[in-house]
Image (cartoon, rainbow, N blue to C red; front, top):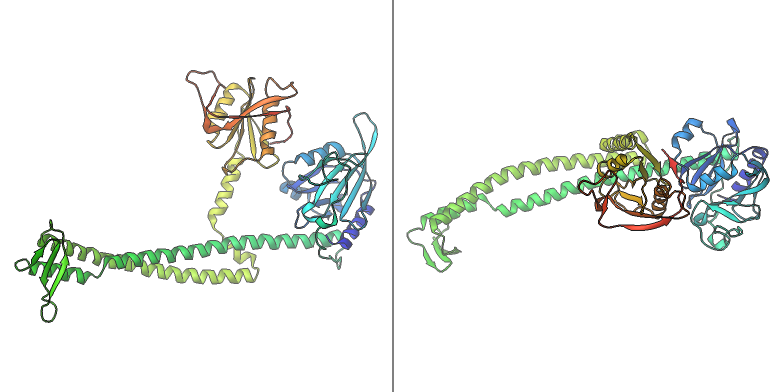
Length: 478
């Protein structure tokens, strides 16, 4: 955000928030939050640490809209909820000449003692981040992974060097808006809407171009096939010549000399012909090629006419699409979207919401579904009926406990953070849950088998890795 715009926002926040108490925290994306301070019509405090557009201001959304767009809380948001919930806002300040905003709160700890805590919004481009500071000004939690002095957990907080800060942003004018927050919200929402439109348009246009390229390639292949079949009349002419020269053809090895009765002066021509093939057999093959070539011309010709028709229609469609994009016509653009995409999305939502009795279900910080069995039979069903080959399977080593599955429909490598969170659940829901550290085995489902006659819950691993974690339940339960 522009320095002057941010200063105006901070002045507005310092009028609205002091004396208010922090309420619920909503995770709107991996790097953005909405915080309730009980302002009702005043809205929620919105903070986003997107490197391309870090920002902070008040937003007015219905609670239903915020809840609908919210995701499971990240570990940082959970820490905010635990540490700052109910905290009384003391002040909102901006560091001079820095894009760093500090929200100071007074909170009461478990012993009933009052402490000052600070939520730092560091709106500095690539180094944009949210930090929680203790009374001594040390970092206790960070929203994004951090680098550099004064930026890591347990460091006394220090803003990043100016070389890492973002270039001066757009100066937002309040103009006809009632507040600078309203102006900023409108600006960034229109910016996001434009980005969404561009993404949709690029996807649809790429699909249209791909379809045209596909049809052109098909046309080229058909024309190549057509050329390979040759001219039907030439095949027939050769067959007739072979039959007409049966009595006078001269054969030497794999060469045969024929009189060309169809050419002026009946010259002698020479052809290659396998020594094991007779002239009648060669003539029969020529007549077969004649028939095949004739059919190919008809069939391929019909297909080429259809492809040319489709290419004309696709070119017209692309022209209309490019006009819709140039005109920023949302309604017209929607008419070019593939219905299959919507169906796929609906099916995914349906699959995700499917009930799994006898199971505990969670969402990791990276958005992966994590499922736990409750009983031995539930574990068997989860591992050998519900889990897919590329899903990750985890279990406490040498202790009875829940089987844990991390869904991996994309087949990409599962983030280490998600593996740790799933491993902590495996430790928590095992007989080693009281231990300080628990060894967890993990592998892909495809490396598991069920020994014949084995009791429910028992598996055999052909390959696995191990990780040691503290038992914990640190992710949002579905």
